[in-house]
Length: 187
Image 1 (cartoon, rainbow, N blue to C red):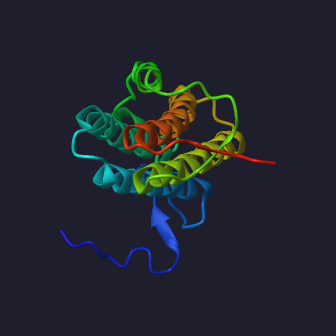
Image 2 (cartoon, rainbow, N blue to C red):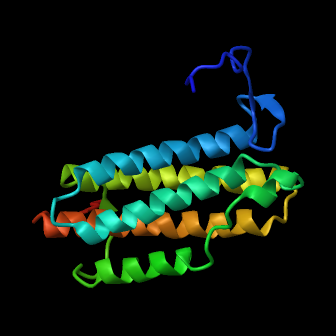
């Protein structure tokens, strides 16, 4: 299978459900942002300390879940193609909450705003968090403009919201385990 097809050379692409749409279509923007997030998570995962296997396991699950989410974003809700999609497991957002709680156990209580940065892997986690927030904003726009009450998109929205929280806590956690304190915001 060749990577290039030429099918998009005129500014249109196909959704998973078969429709041809402009490359700036809200669905393309939404799953494109999700793809960027998944790539950014790959950067964070590649930068993790060798002894952080639990976090690596988190990333394996998260990146897989983002592929499932991307398929839903690339498919119109009324399409029969939705029958071929895998539903995001109901537990994924709660699983992230459990991991947030576990990572938070070693962190000092947060009483002030912190600035992104510190160790490079933590800084990348903050960048991933901001990309995740953009994905969330784009998804809410998709839901609004498509007048969709699709339960799967709502579940993905919750997942992205929780994922950005996870990435914030992960950045703090990585700085902590690597010996770098949070840098607080000064007025």
